[in-house]
Amino acid sequence: MVKGSAERSIKRDLLVRTFLRRFGILNTTLIVTLVAILCSFLMYLGIGTIFEEITPVGMIASVIIPFLLAPPLSYAVLRLSQKLGLAEKELLNAYNSLELQVRMRTAELATANRLLQDEIIMHARTEKKLKKGVEKLQKSLEKTIAAIAAVSEIRDPFTAGHQKRVATLAYAIAEEMGLPKSKRDRLHLAAIVHDIGKVQIPTEILIKPLHLSEAEFNIIEAHPQIAHDILYGIEYSRPIAKIVLQHHELLDGSGYPQGLSGDEIILEARILTVADVVEAMASHRPYRPAHGIGKALEEILHNKGKLYDPKVVDACLRVFYEKEFAFE
Image 1: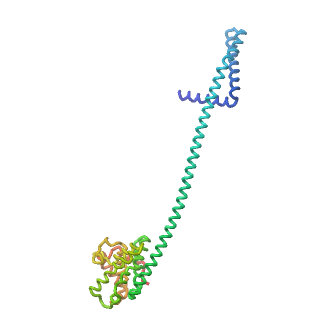
Image 2 (image 1 turned 45 degrees about the vertical axis):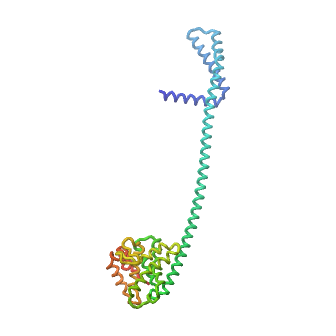
Image 3 (image 1 turned 135 degrees about the horizontal axis):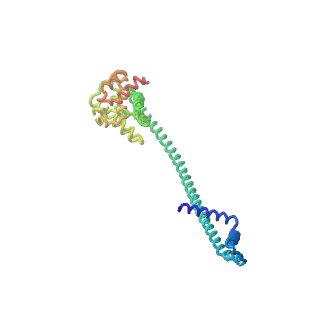
C-alpha cells in the first residue's frame, strides 16, 4: 500500500512538473483559477437542480468564492514550482560536482599513466645500456682469458690446444646435462685457462719426459691455486677462478689443492675434471704416449661415483657415443 502511494505521488509530481514547464507559473495559476470557478459553478448548478433551488445569489457566490480562493491557490502553485525547481537545481549541482570529480580523476590518471610510460621508457633505456655494458665486459673478459691461455700454451708446447679441447668437451657435457647458457659460458672460459697456473712452474718440469718426483709433483699440484690467484685479481672473473681452483678435486677427497669431496666441489668444477681427464688421457704427453678415447672413457666409467660425478660421467659417455663428439 505504501509502495502504491509513493508511485502515485511520483506520477503526480511528474504531471505537475510537465504542466508547469509547458504553460509557465502565471498561466498555470490562471488556468487553475478558471477551472476552480467552472467546477464551482457546475457543482452549484448540479446541486441546485437536484434540490430545485437555483438562485442568482447562489450563482454569483459560486463564481466569487473561487476568486477568493485564487490567492492561496496561486501561492500553492508558486511554492510547488519553487520546490520542483530547487530539486532540479540540486540535481544539476550534484551532476556538475560528479562530472568535475570524474574529470579531475581522469586528469590524475592520465598524468599517472604518462609518468608511468616515461618511467618504463627510462627503465628500458637503462636496461639497454646495462646490457650493452655487460656485453662489453663479457667480451673484454673473453679477450683477457684468451690472452692468458695463449701465454700458458706458449710456455708448454706439449699441451698446446689442450685447454681449448677441454673447453669444447666441458661445454658439450654441460649442454647435455641441461645447464643454463650463462653457466655453460662461464665453464667454457674457466676451461680455457684452467692450467694458467703452470706459468709459474719451471719449464723443465713441464716438459720432463720421465715421471715426476714427489717434490716436482708437489710443485705441479700448486698450479690450481696459482691460477685462482691470478684470475681472482681480474674483475668479474671470480666465479671462473673458483671453478679453476677446484678442477683437480675428486669426489672421495683425494684430489688437490684443498682435498674437497662430494658436493663441496661445485658442479662446473666436477664437469671440468672429467673433461680434463678424458682429453689428457686421449692425448700425447712427454712422459707417455696417448691412451686414446676408449681408454679415457674406461677410466671415468671405472671410477664413476668414486672419483668422478656419476651424472657427469653419464653425460660425457652420451656425448661421445650418442652425439658422436670428437676432438678437432
